[in-house]
Amino acid sequence: MSRHFALHPSRLLFLCIVFPHLLVMVVFAWLPFPAILYLALLCVLLVSCVYYVLRDASLRLGGACVALRLEEKHIVLVDRENRETTGKLLGSSVVTPYLTVLNIALDGTRRTRNVVILPDSMDATSFRQLRVLLKWWVSAV
Image 1: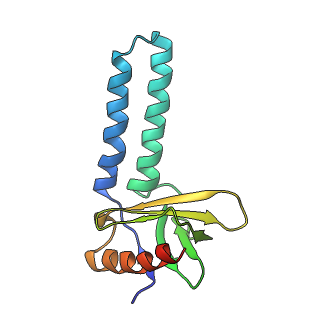
Image 2 (image 1 turned 60 degrees about the horizontal axis):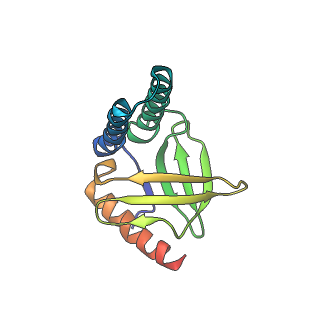
């Protein structure tokens, strides 16, 4: 069973990022904010949306996770610039048939990294293999 998984851009994740951002923008438009505050909030939401779409959904930013590798006691994330980051899979990770969220404590830092994987992020066989392997890892953590 493969332990190296390549990730591809995800249209589902794109929708999951853009739709809530747009919804919040519409809700803010109905609230009685001063125009300058509304514009500031709109700019923050727009930057957030663009950043997460470029990093997580389309995998175009340098820090985007484009592959992951499961090793004995840790997980290795490979970013777009071929840098490898190792970490430990946290028990708060979620593995379901339609959504996988990996919460990873990065080695040598206090930071964590979250990787969201949807079925269109990889081929069906790889997605199933990853979920099976991760089910055992998450239950063992």
